[in-house]
Image (cartoon, rainbow, N blue to C red; front, top):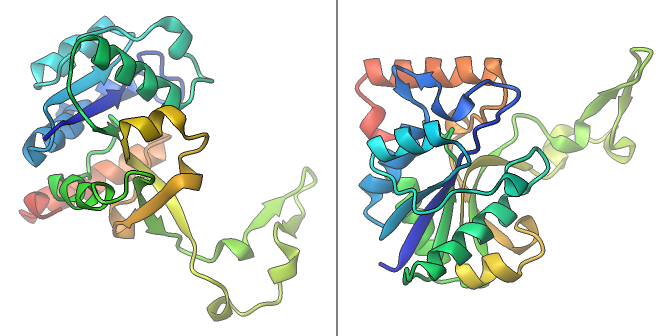
Length: 235
């Protein structure tokens, strides 16, 4: 296979305390990402990059490896994903791991499926110069986005499109924040993920980027509903 999965999971989450190991439907949320990676059968190694002993302990319990600890300098609020993944790549090479492709899989993606990982890998495997990541359609056209001034007044963020009909505007998409696939050399050299990428489209109902308590509630509600209907395996 010659692929590795790196799950970035720092311990000092701010908006949702202990976000990466908080119970989601009675299991630590990181366990869903680990399980999807295992079920995909794509990876020689599934690694969790963390600065937290507690996260490391739980990740091991669910089948991940913790062969190195993430340094504090890469565990603050300003560290970008690419820096964390590159640290994991170089550490993995130092350990003698033989791999070509790297999947950065986020720890708070309970609606991800092994099939998503498999299908997206089939794309990236043909495109060494491109990242592949999940995207979904926005509910409305981004060109019609509105802003709010300090005094409460509404204004058009893109005034050139203010009077355009919605059906005349291009469909827009957003980064779902579930995973990024890329060749290890691309991870090392690319200056931007989004400028060197192809999108892997998933349905909007599975595109919940968990950043706050409302997102968490919606994701858990969706997962619970799917579970009751016996559709979890069909994500």
